[in-house]
Length: 81
Image (cartoon, rainbow, N blue to C red; front, top):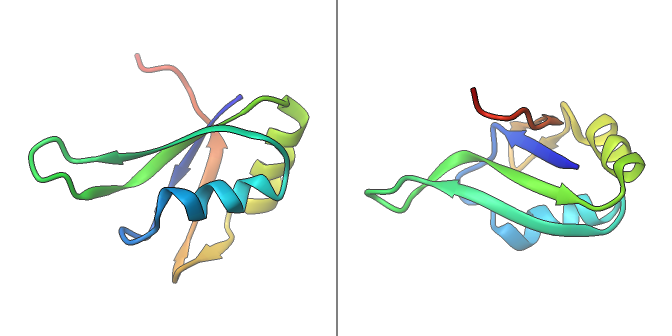
């Protein structure tokens, strides 16, 4: 399942996000979105987990959790329109 993670602290590293979600199950990949021109973090990213029930547990457990002073927004990613 592809999971959207928003309201991330701009200093949060990919490894920290992977470790956070890894507590709920196997993480296939983590992608932090950056600005094309400046290369700076945009404050959101995506986590892919192989097991849907683990992914749902991560969504339920992490949505609204404070990480590095910011309250995370975590939900299932929707395809672009």
